[in-house]
Image (tube, rainbow, N blue to C red):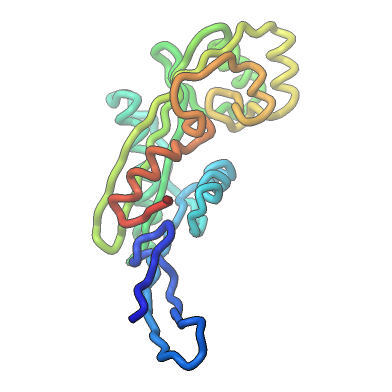
Length: 225
């Protein structure tokens, strides 16, 4: 009898395939495995790259969820709420899938920073984080539409930024990199030179806390290792 071996995935998440013995003259066994599609509900190329790094097979389908900064929620709860909203916006289109959604923002002092849309906004954010520590919080949600199960978590990383001169800020903003990035910098890009050190998960700053995500995926029968 042939026993299927799964590498990285629970049986329910593996693609449909046939398993045949390698030697000739042996009886063949066919085992059908039903695939549960994984959907990344995000337009972020960085999150797409991170999921690819850990070997997940998935499709990208950004939703139309309108993010709302609710001042009645604490940052960790807000991050989870936004990620849930993103997941739910896509979930209605799939009857039997695993939806992964996330949201990342910066908290500096008592202010929540999103993504600057203009150079002026980027300069204001960079001046605010210059020479001090701030938190990067990513909330993520995993939703199984077939079993109607949902899990949301928030992960925090402390980032220490060096003191930036006006010339450095102007030069960095001219590069175009800060636009559309949480806190107006990209730690895996040119923004790496403004970071002195971090406390916590580096990938959380990039946009997805891979270690926490991998642990949470186990609850949905998906094993990265």
